[in-house]
Length: 92
Image (cartoon, rainbow, N blue to C red; front, side, top):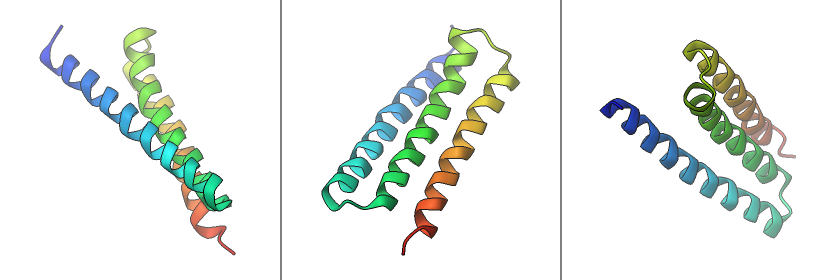
């Protein structure tokens, strides 16, 4: 396996760890403050993290076409960004 493959794998693992930590903090804040916007922030970052991981998993583990994996991962990430934007504009 090439060096770029290992670099991408390590980057995805780091993204999973950081994304999971952000989701944990946002959800913990939601529970502590009963803040609905923080709930949507947690969902948004969860989807962004899931999109990043799905992209790599589709391509490497399932042998999907590269562009198909990128399109799927990006679509999931877009929904995550929408959730975060919703959390910003839903503040009353």
